[in-house]
Amino acid sequence: MGLVRITLVLGALEAFGPLSMDLYLPQLPQLARSLGTSDALAQATMSVCMIGLGIGQLIAGPLSDRFGRKRPLVAGVVLFAVLSAVCAVAPTVEVLLAARFLQGLAGSAGVVISMAVARDLFQGVELSRMLSLLALVSSLTPIIAPVIGGQLARFMDWRGIFFVLAGIGAALVLVAQLGLRETLHEGRHTGGPLGTTAVHIASVMRDPLFVAIMLAGCLGGTAFFAYLSMSSFVLQGEFGLTPQIFSLIFAANALAHLGGAQVSRSLVRRFGTVRMYLSGQLAGAAAAILLLTATLLQAPAVAYILLLALYLGASGLGGPNGTTIALGGHGSRAGTASALLGMAMFTAGAVVAPLVSAVAGTSTLTLAATVAAGAVLAALIGWFAVRRRAPRADPSCGPAGIDPGATVAAGTEPGATAAAATASAAAAPAPAHRDATTVPAKTTGIPRESSASHTERLP
Image 1: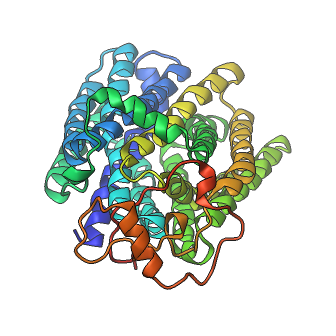
Image 2: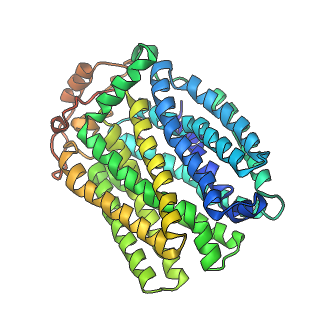
Image 3: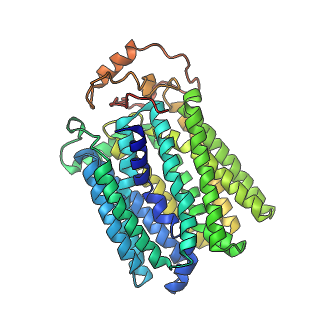
């Protein structure tokens, strides 16, 4: 597969998460009025979908490790399309909540398997660059979707939005079926009964570096979901914005997130994944503290909106690098590891943020305080845990300093042994730079697996 085709296909599949949320985000207040329910239950239609997206990854990820990437992916996309139509005809908020949860379960296949496919094809810094490129493609969704949703609100209600989602799901079935080949070859399937999933989960969770990044992701997910679920009520309710203006601001903030991801992609070869990850975490914490300060000082709406954009830009800077570091030692278990990361982030945010909203209400202060708490705690974990445990590696190399361009010789089949990869790396020229802020990979207590990586570097 060509790089452009890989990027477009995986980016489209990874867009399930933002697509499920952002297209009808401007319609949340109207949905609450239409179904005669509260703002909290309207927000809950997003929460249950996020919980489904999180839990479903823990199902789809291990299934993709056992049966290959393509079959679970296509099944998930088909179910997503069907359940979107069910959401469109839901007669009550209770039925909508149930359908949204199942829709999230189905859509999780696209989110987690797209990351696993990327891990099959790339590793090290090239994986980080690929994930940043995916962020560029998938970030177009939260930029475009709210704008389209705001304009569609002129012609259709929230039910029409879900019919649109059903049509998009049907189109993605064709994308998954025709545009993606199997990337996990037979020799690398985990095999055995599905009960062995617990063994693979336990193996991944014994990696303290992975656990640290997962915990930071939980806190970052809480901050992000607070923004996602409260922003339409805060900006439209307290600042008096129309759905159309809100959708434009939401799109601009998504553009800031995209910009952060592309800054990461441009600089990661020079500075390495660990430094870029920590830079994003620290910048996000600083922006969140400024946001809370501006709220307490009753700064104007423009300051509030700009600081939200700054926080989201920092999130885009660190996110792909955290995923790269976490997945680096789990090649054949990439589906399971990706699922654990996604499940933790989605479910933590979907559970904690609505609880905070229910207790403290939906206001500028609640939103700012939740974002600040999540961002600061995530930065502390990054600084005191990830920085100490991340593998020492050259910025242009993969896990444990192995050059991704040298790990697989021409013609080597996927699933080549770690010994062969190490021998290939040993024959390669010594790296010119080392990341002095990290320690050797062996301190994680988990052997670093090697898997086939793409023989080309991303441009």
